[in-house]
Image 1: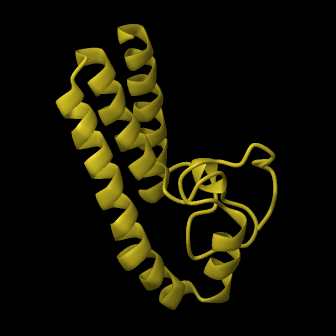
Image 2: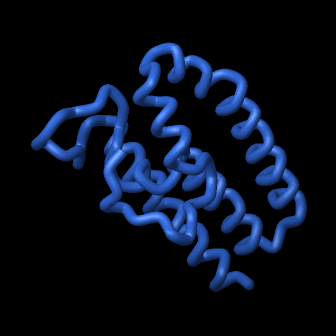
Length: 123
């Protein structure tokens, strides 16, 4: 159980770090038309990879520590993140980016990547 938790923590850290770097402007494609919002890396697979990575870290720590309390905290944090994304972030981004963001919402799932998704797909 602990080894699985360490793997989940590591995966979450990588996902969160990559996502944060993209938000900071590092690692974005430099050629072609640049959309107003990020369409690179994990943002091509899920809309909220930074939150997802942090939740994976938290859940992995619950496994490593074998802590049911930390597990409950992880579930609560996931619920709060989901509510914030749905009620605050997505409406704000819809207003800011319009039709391009609507297409992104249609094509890219919020939390879990689709099995048949291809990162090379264009939006």
